[in-house]
Amino acid sequence: MSDGRPAANLGKDLVGLEPLSGDQILTILDTAEPFKEISERQIKKVPVLRGQTIVNLFFEPSTRTRISFEFAEKRLSADTVNVSATGSSVEKGETLVDTARNLEAMRIDMVVMRHGAAGAAQFLGDRISSNVINAGDGQHEHPTQALLDLLTLRDEFGGLDDLRVCIVGDILHSRVARSNIWGLLRVGADVAVCGPQTLIPRGLEELGVKVFPHIETAIEWCEALYVLRLQLERMNAGFVPSLQEYNRVYGVTSERLDRSDDEIPILHPGPMNRGVEIDSDVADGPHSLILPQVTNGVAVRMAVLYLLSGGEPEKADAAKEGEA
Ligand code: CP
Image 1 (cartoon, helix red, strand yellow):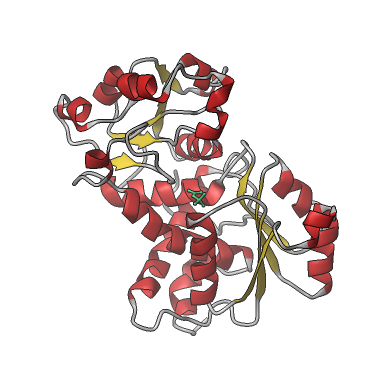
Image 2 (tube, protein in one colour):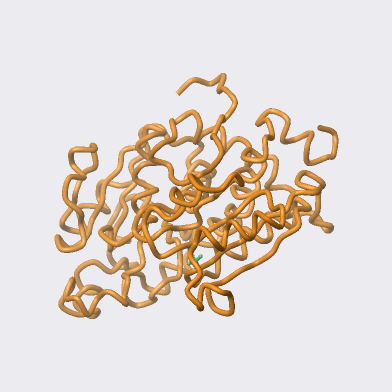
């Protein structure tokens, strides 16, 4: 990684981390740094995106991502509108592109979209002139989640190069895993996954990702453990014998972590299934980074909005003081 990093040059849209370079990813993280402080102010508002109109188009449920984007937009003084499938003309059969083109006819600048179909963000970005930010598309990518995870890991360890991170759980169905794998590899981290064979996609080793079938060896190897939600809605397809069995074999428990000589920071994107993939004493314990992840989500999303709106990374500090 070069230290004199270039401008991010993210292009029009952010659809995933796979197309980005390590330098681009690190520039986004660097740009998020000055934005962290805005959320600690009593009056959490700066004029960075004044006059910009952003539509949050959420076709799937979300708590963290939707609210975090909305806070990021409002704290940067953008005008925002929230649209969900329920209650919109999508329920009457309107297509995604028709919905977006109608929004564009009202002169919007950006769309933040969560959609159940992999590729939906790219599809939309190719068809409208507004910036499109992927807030999770099917099982494809969830780039801002991975960016906030990388920022949290960098805060904890001081750097990401050669950091050993293991992602444990339902890798197969997880857009969070996919974005984290790309992001971590791009910035030079060592990446592993762990879980039942039925929930590990093929071909990961070819990307340089280690695969641990046993959580105990994964814990021995890693410096940070990223726990994924077991996607219960898919479990009737027989990917694991039962939730109790999954917890017994792969659950991240304090007993398992205590066997390590090191204190291992724990991440989870939420929502959690307590007592399934993670026990409450780990989720709420002293090494949990789960709430710092959520806090960092607002700053990372501010950085992405700022950069896609044409902001220059090195001017972010001045921009938030209304000087650039
Ligand atoms: N991490 C995440 O995407 O959470 P939400 O589904 O609540 O947005």
